[in-house]
Image (cartoon, rainbow, N blue to C red):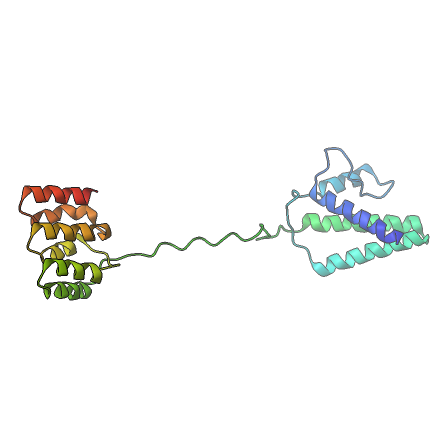
Length: 219
């Protein structure tokens, strides 16, 4: 049991030393007792990377080295060639540090929980198809009264988008200026090319009607 605690303590020290660089000139504490200054310096120079650096090592080789390290510590705890086994354990630990220090950095490591997928783009809209527009205008033309024409147009075109030229064609289905302005007022919120609104001026003859048209398309 004591050997296991000693192994855990050494592995913890190994992990910390692999993540945190030692101060300049200070030994890492992982070289065996009585080791030369050059050996301790070599341990210090073997450190590489910051706390979050991830590296790639062979799992089987790492498990084999850890198993040997645990075995050496157990033998040292039992008292058989204690000092020699402890030195061998330090050497094995130093070799393991070299493996980690020289290992290539991992690519595409864990960067935290996955981010939420981006919101889908808003659905693209397009002007009402020509055949559908013709069907609606034919239905409007079959009505005799303006109120019914407006009702059919509003009901049939709900959810559709228009170009200014298409609005002009709908306007032409009505004779009176007031009804034509009602058509523009109805469809203008769903017009895609509003920069062409000036083209609707040709559908009105009187200046008052044109002024009201400008108020609608400018709102």
